[in-house]
Image 1: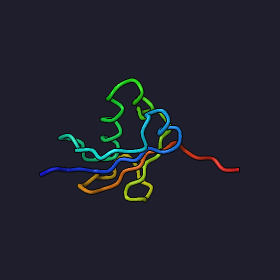
Image 2: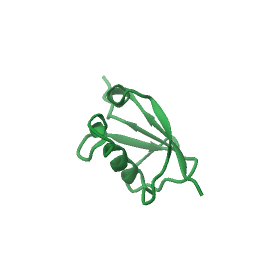
Image 3: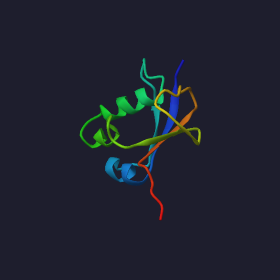
Length: 86
């Protein structure tokens, strides 16, 4: 069974990664937002924008979530830097 998710990148992350999103087959063992973020950060230099310790927020199906949130087939996961208002 395939576990495809839609991943979106916003604001500075979109610029750093050179793309606004992708459809991704989740690798074995990647079942949470935090594990997905770590997997993506491991892709290489530009992807370090998603590395642990970087301020990045996540939404799962348009709801803010923490790293422990479970990801399932068909989900939409969005990553974005914190936004400040004024």
